[in-house]
Structures are given as C-alpha cells and as structure tokens.
Length: 149
Image 1 (cartoon, rainbow, N blue to C red):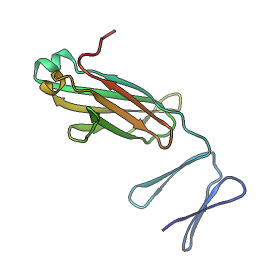
Image 2 (image 1 turned 45 degrees about the vertical axis):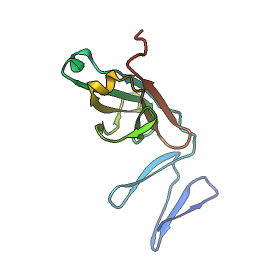
Image 3 (image 1 turned 90 degrees about the vertical axis):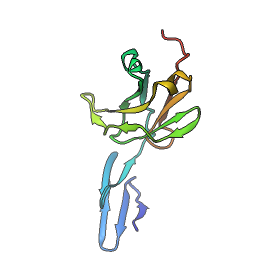
C-alpha cells in the first residue's frame, strides 16, 4: 500500500516501507509493478477532441458495420474509452489502440466498435465516451437516421 503525503511545494511524496519518491514536476506518469499507472498533474485536464465515424457503405454491403471513434488533443497518453448502444454499455466487438504522441506533444487514439449491419440498420444510437479522469471527458453519438452533412 502506497501513501500519498502532500509537501509544501505541490509535489506529492509516495512512500512504502523503505521506498520513497517525491515528484516536483508539473506533470508526470509513474508506473508501479505490472502496470498500475499513476498520473499526477496540477491542472485540470481539458477534454479530448472526438470524432465519431459511421460505417462505410462498402462494409455495410458485406453485412458488417464498424464505428470509429477518434480521440485527439489528449493531454496525457492514457484514457478510458467506453461505448454504449441505446444507453447500454457495450464491451463485445470493441478494440482500442494505445495512445500515440503527436507532433504537437498531445496524444491521440482510435477505438473501433464492430456490430452487425442489421444492428446498425435498426437505428440504434451508438455513443463513444473518452475520459482522461475527472471532468476531462468527451462523448459523441451517432445513429443511422442522423443526417449526413
């Protein structure tokens, strides 16, 4: 168990037994053990920018439908991505890429939801939500009957 002790200079002091580490950075990521990730920042993270793409007509002709959620302008290289269909959580058919750093220092990722063409044709409402913690989340929704502009 790690304890977090604030110090007078903003940083946090992490300690466990003889292990001790203090952070004096505005932003840092620390990974413990086999992948537990702790992200420390002194600022509220902005919400990522999201684009949600409909299935292509070529794919629908084959009886398949893949929705693509693109998240960009993320402040950190980690985000939770979730999908819903008509408001119910969906986990089957979801593949999400790891975040990659962009030339401007922000991060981007892609998430894909595969459904049957019949499910898409039934005009279900699909939603992708990308969260970087707290208030830093964004959501987009699409369904077949929406206008294409």
